[in-house]
Length: 200
Image (cartoon, rainbow, N blue to C red; front, top):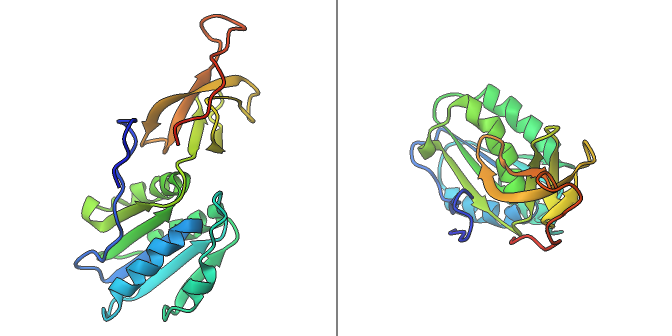
């Protein structure tokens, strides 16, 4: 999927079976369930075990749990929140062996959070795929107090951590898995940029 406009935003993949997989971990949330179902169809006939992690928490309101439960995958782990899924993913990757393939599907916020967990496990580029599903609402990081805010749609907003009015920059940090936000009136106190919807 090609995202135009913001050069630092990741270029996402389309999920497909990765070669050499001895164990497939498929994690997704909300609208990412559609990509998970497509991948499961493509994985049919392979002997490698598949572990599915799915979170019903979704900004878009999409839920594919019923369809995922109807698949033949025996190892479906359902989570009420994205954070619970991320913690389960951390534990799974901690016990993973060589030959594990990781597939992620969902919102940009979810993908970023999952990649923050996966990166320390040194999975190579050919061992991880990420498919974006749903809207491009932003996950934002406050440079002043280190607070992450999910699903930001406005250019100017108040940080829930420190209360500072922030402006969201069009720079996506892969290390932080978020867009950066800075004090909106840092140059001229009291002078705020115009309120506008973010390009999502």
